[in-house]
Length: 92
Image (cartoon, rainbow, N blue to C red):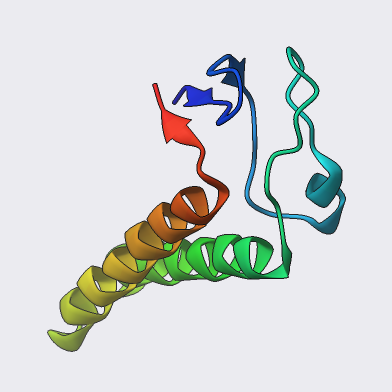
């Protein structure tokens, strides 16, 4: 997935997990990408939801595990989308 800098619209590589990403800058214009504790928390929550969904799909044999997998997948997608929207980084 290509992400675009909100300042110069140049492509950037970014990951929503990790405190050190809070100082991430665009490699082209050196503009700060807007990382905060909220965007990092959303990234971590999305990652945890992804692992819950994957575990429920792979290991679950009960009928409720399908519902858990779908709910966790929805949380994952929502958290990642909210994190990108808060940072104003666009998919290219």
